[in-house]
Amino acid sequence: MPKRRSSYYDGYWPRYTPTRPIEVEGGIKAKSRSGKFVKNWWADRWIAALKRLMDSGRLGRGRSYARRGQVLEIKVETGRISARVQGSRRTPYKVSIQLQPLSKQQWEQVFDVLAEQAIFAAQLLNGEMPADIEQVFDAAEVPLFPSSRGDLQTDCSCPDWANPCKHIAAVYYLLGERFDEDPFLLFELRGRGKEQVAAALRERRIQGMEETSLPAYVPEAIEAVEVVALEQCLEHYWDIGAEAETVVLSIAGPKVDMALLKRLGVPDFLEARSFWAQMERVHDGVTARALEVAFAESEQEQDLRQPM
Image 1 (tube, rainbow, N blue to C red):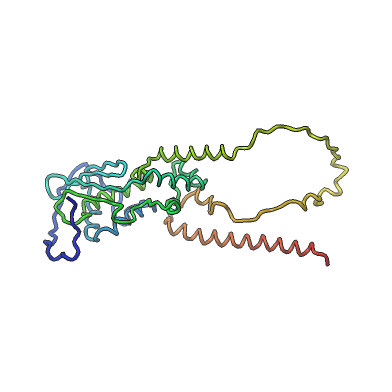
Image 2: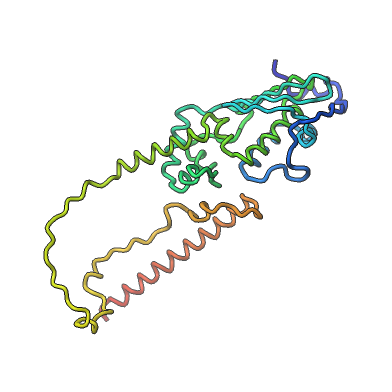
């Protein structure tokens, strides 16, 4: 039976009595010993989702459990995490965390958007998590991270009335560290593993190549052209020919913003979100200025061609 969350009736519940968990050997200890728990933005977003669901006291105790190694085991399956956590009682508590898997239609929407972003598809096929992957899910109107209480279902066999409790928080924190190492686990929880994502993207890439493939080339008769010796045309070598008048240039911003930066990723010594926010401002400014200069030059050239 799911636990109740206290609100108006807080006064009817017994006050919290601190208990000391039984120490264990061989538990799963967090790599983080102090300070920030995770490194990458996607793991940070996972932790942030939990902070919206529980009070700071239980959150802190859960973080302490994770660092002490009180979590005995964690199993990750599609849409579900099961774990055992050693608390103050002899029998470890059973923890369950369920994240609603995306439907087949939702995943198709995500793959369609990804297929349109060549740089994102290339990074995923290379086993990398794009820095702006959340924007792809937003564009497909599909949630990647838990965005509401209904997205995340948690349960623990401990006597604590609160849900999530500190044991759930401990497991949740350790999952954040696993996401740091393998962000594709988040995809797996949402219903598609790394290989399934790669296979879907390859399929769309092949379909795109077939749709845009050119007809077979059939050589035609080539008309003979008189070739003038170089020494006979040196005097006009640097002149612009009449053909240049028919050349049409198209000047516009890049189809994929910051493609090279996205391919290189965020430097280890910088925080991802602040880095991308700064780079977006710089990129937008440089692009706008480049277009301004380009079109200004075009207008000057046109003025020069006007009859006096």
